[in-house]
Image 1 (tube, rainbow, N blue to C red):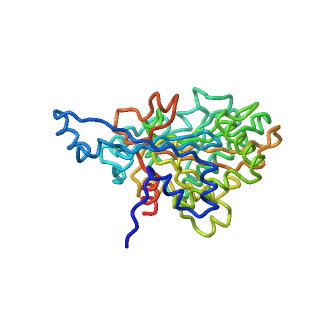
Image 2 (image 1 turned 135 degrees about the vertical axis):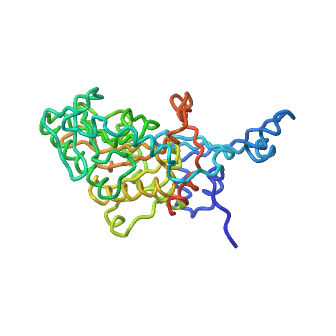
Image 3 (image 1 turned 30 degrees about the vertical axis):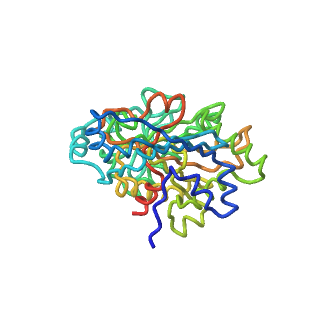
Length: 366
């Protein structure tokens, strides 16, 4: 007999069915608060509700689940009505391709002439070259400009090269200023993700003094967790996601390198995936590239953010011994949709997410 599909709004029941060790870990890491939203639908709205949601009954009682990571205080609200909607996995539209094609010829298409270079020069890879960002976030703020104009025209080898070039840029930045030891790498793909230039590119910064607040907050949470429970936060986090069926499938070689990932129970926004490993070596780079390929081809994502949380180059005053390299990916929605996916709830309270992590995991498995 076929087992019913798991749903995020049933997470409290799913956790209760776990083996004792994983159930205890889930309770330690996550607070799960279910709620039911009720309403009355006037006769004049019934036609619109049926057309939009399938039936009036579907909206009369809506199961809602709020999940909070007790250690980091990251959390997410899921609504059964929103999370049960199937999402399009078509992989992009002709209009998007035409839109990307129409922007060819921008300065990033000729970076040697159209972009400035950093004080230490450029770093060149097989598939990209670096530039200095004109309007900087920080003292050292560079660009990884892809040879391919189309930001979605990547493969595993290209992604590996983009990250390799970013790491060499960071090495040169610290060589220029040894105090610029706190690295941050990000990839905003298309305008929905905050990219002002369509041409494929990533960004990299090297900060002085301390890491950026959200990275430092995660480090402190992991250190406090280890002090209280005598175990590793990131390992325990992975165990719970794996027990629930949310782990990312990897090759034996990548697994042996202690590189892993999962679809997050507390996503910052739609379809968030978290990867981590001991460093940003080739196994983690290849897993990232493989997941991005699945993300865009199986799940239909076209606009996304990728953020890399990396420990600083030594020496540093803080304890980073329990902090791996963490890579976070999130879908930013249809580039053709003019409605923002971030509002006051996301900025000041808690993210509201429509995609069900269990459904995302099923799509990633292809």
